[in-house]
Image 1 (tube, rainbow, N blue to C red):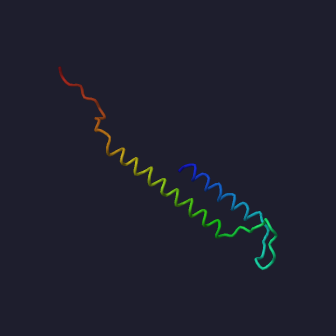
Image 2: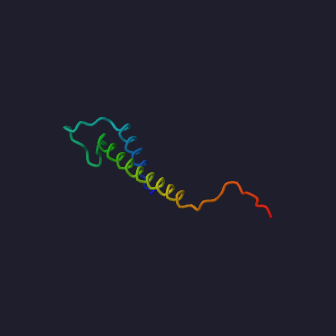
Image 3: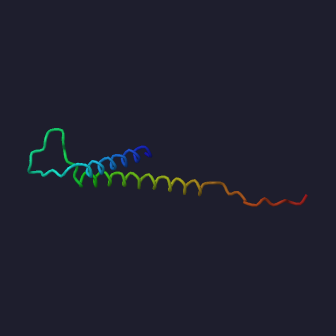
Length: 84
């Protein structure tokens, strides 16, 4: 799941870079084959998917940590010496 998050964020970065470096193309003009403009909607959709995966991942990590802390056996922090 962590690798998926990294891959999605890399995809968002590539889309933003492509959007910033591409020239402005009107939809009414002919678009040459092999060149498709990056729309803002494309970037927002991929970013929303990455945020959804990240929120599920963080929820899973925190809930597992809470479950682990609740189910740990009780251990006294300071050992007390008992008289012989």
